[in-house]
Image 1 (cartoon, helix red, strand yellow):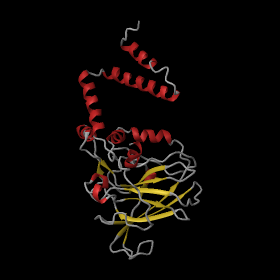
Image 2: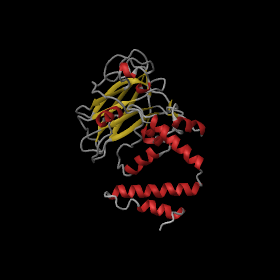
Image 3: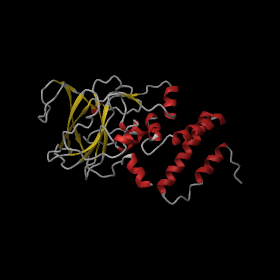
Image 4: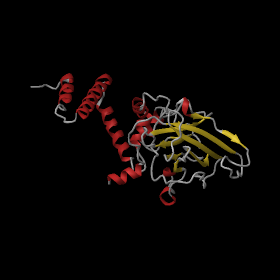
Length: 304
């Protein structure tokens, strides 16, 4: 009879999954048991600490809604999201670098005409974004959907505001690349912002005295048929938080120089009413496949 000593207990828990039909599921569960048991032994975890951890995870789950994912935020600040991203994108072969999806890919991204101001009702310094989607050889990829979203001038995403339920999305849209693989739009220059700190993850960040801020950036999700979906950010060059991103998402290649311009017209020939900024960035796609992530609210509706 197994006595379930400190070491025998781990072996018994691992072997309890031996009959799992799916080999990959079996492997993942057994490795999870090994890691968790090793952690408990290495740290001499106390009952009080174990109970605190259970309560923390419970409250993390309770904070989640169809448009807020506290577990994604937890994964982000622990570096797990970027590690998963890194091991799944080891060979970029000249393709644009990836980074975290983040917890604010929510709601509907409506197909929007090129040149639209997606932050029309928001205050802030105006910005013109011109981009192009190509293959690794620089050939244009036409007809590709590109989802865009970013925070406002106060550092909030639309889904964080009470007005989201009544006024709908802001600073998010979907563009379809033209025959030359290009798309362009107007918006405002986003600013650095703190991650949501009104939940368990925020409590942890503040207790451990870690920086709360993310450097200013614009999110892009490019889903070209025949290519790996690209989830990435373009960061605003010169932001003081580039070296201390709380979710470890910055990569040198993803930092863009934003030019301040005083031209009377923007690149599409339409008038500029004040000084504005120009962001230019080209996305290079890697051949392959895979499903692009779905916005949180859309995913929740499918599962309901």
